[in-house]
Length: 490
Image 1 (cartoon, rainbow, N blue to C red):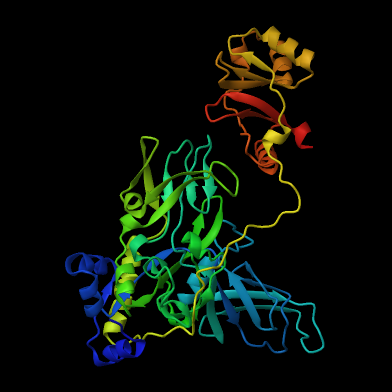
Image 2 (tube, rainbow, N blue to C red):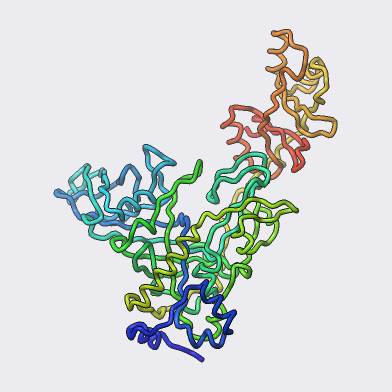
């Protein structure tokens, strides 16, 4: 049994098309089977709403009088990219404002623009004979702009990893705030509702596919950047007219100590052309698997601790080594459902027809990491032996070890070599000046540490941020395995 785009579009025009959401399709296939579902259902709608950092917009403001060819351009103090023609710019959602970084960025600007708010435009130029104006400072709204084109190079990841943190400190990442020692877990994506989960082989998704984008109509331009279909990490390159969109589905956001982004709403209709597509669009959260990845290890190839289903992720907890960790989503399932329902309504009302793609997306693209010509060094490459004293040791012994080993830092442990603190030569000098003899009175107990697999630049930044000159190196059990100091880094 097969259907065609023309037949389905005719049903849309006649008002007798059968449209269901991806979640509804799961129940239909369970109750009636794949063959009947393929016969009865014409279109399955999908939806996702989450942070999509590779998003932005091309804007054209028209020419000033006299004209200006912008060298630098700011919109609400967010620096836009100008490497295009004179009156064009591109604003990326992760670009932060110059005056209040981490509070406002390109994503917030796009939300404000779509919401009809006035935007301050400032620009300057080196001037030319045909573009003699040196500066512009004005206000525009989306109605004043000629073209406002949302152009997103990488959206709608097929799935995301589940991020956890094994280290002893809180991490601020694009996967949100990760608490130390596996204190929480974060994931993203809508699971069974996600567009690319419902057509993983791109039978119906390709160049020219008409979609729901940001509350308006958009199109697939092709595969997105970092498209990795063999690993089920496919992505899409999307575009649409910002003037048709709403700020409900384009929302600027800030990640604490990481930066700004934008939540984007994407929905794709999947025509049920055959039984194979009926089966694929009935995929459940239990069948969609991803990896639990340890972001506490600052490497590209972070450890994968286990596989987990989206059903488990959406339950609110994920099991790891016998411990149940609180798990939450960076994406909105509520809005993903709302997008799928809205797209379903558009189609049933005859307001949205399907496009047969001019060319489907590749299933063979290979994602390659950055080629690096210099060797990346890690703490384990430069650490040296730590000089250790036990926490019940006399302060005089600590002073003697500093002199004997010509070291400024003595690491304090218990008898099992578990880190308890650190003492410096300055601490000893200060103790003698104040007639202190108890080691416990001078030890620094809150110690900033490193691990073997920390890159050198991470260790250097940690020292700089904490105004210290050494980091004890510990293993996963807090056992001291060395020390790295500013001398090694230099």
